[in-house]
Length: 204
Length: 256
Ligand SMILES: [Zn+2]
Ligand SMILES: [Zn+2]
Picture 1: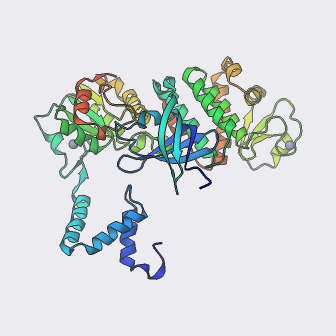
Picture 2 (picture 1 turned 180 degrees about the horizontal axis):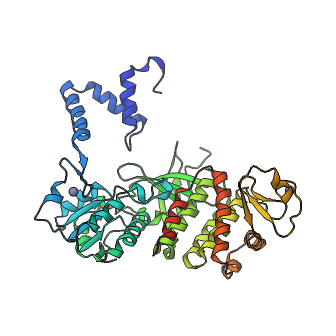
Picture 3 (picture 1 turned 180 degrees about the vertical axis):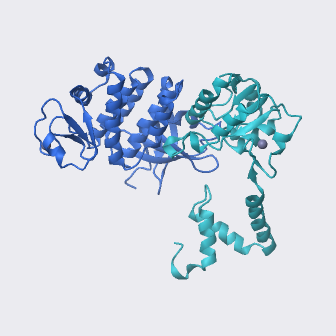
């Protein structure tokens, strides 16, 4: 009941509509958030708005690893103390954060930004798979690629596809150990399970 | 309260879409209710009791609650996970194609038991047969039949005349073969089809199971014609290119 005449001013329904576009937010929650913001002190609201704009203006993708960053190349790619011979391939930037929290991986990353999911209209060309191939062709230091996509059908299919593309390069390709339960997402794994999985990896 | 609030059924998981935090919307294909869209809560968390059971393409028994928009999955128990498919990218891409076809040709809450059986049976064959291209053609022809789009391969689809051997053309937009006379005024895209290919198609259409087809050996060029022909017809029916067909071609054409 958002557009029924007297019920609300245009800016109110506009904000509710914007909230409604966010993942996991239905019309009810969108309305609740909107009314919460109306009652919020102006400086808090302004600070929230600025934070949103700052994210959009300052956060970019690293053109080497495609992780989200404020500087390009990102801190991880430019850190000389990290192991330049290993690249861990993950689905999302959130997975990089999850792995960084474990502190058990010291190499570099490559973020695919999704998985092959034809049913949802996502094919290999919609992901950052070809940039990975180019990156490997131009970098002779890399000795190991760890394919850390999620342990479900689409994650596995994506890894198999990447494996097929990069195996002619002759680089060692591994998978994290099977500590991760099938179907769960990597970003939700607890740190111990994740550490064990990344430490006990196996050849693909 | 005449209607119960929960129900049990079995399903194949056709499609998954991450919703929020840890939830997913699943598209299930069931024997008694056709296509059902339902929410699986917490399924992306590794400790979820549902996740492993509701993997894409799994066959599972499920218990759901009716919801205003979408039903919610309360419990799930995997029946069959088709492991033989999951370890092979070619087979995965073909299984996803089957799932996209079932999704595309079915309607929510409209049961089609034959289509369900066809999907389960074909996934089972896809685990073990090396005749996967013929399996896909068999699957397509029977999916079309169970959906009310059975291609006409015996009589001319326009004038119903009995087709003489030789000189046949398949008209994608008409859903069948045209006789030489009807072909003259047809505006369809026509694909020439040899008598042999015709016979293979008719055989695939007539057989009620894949066992007798599995033993056939059809030369690659003939397989390619059959594939193109049915693809044109399906493309005409669904009015779009199937992303899974694109992916399947990409996988099978790449040198392995
Ligand atoms: Zn980077
Ligand atoms: Zn005719």
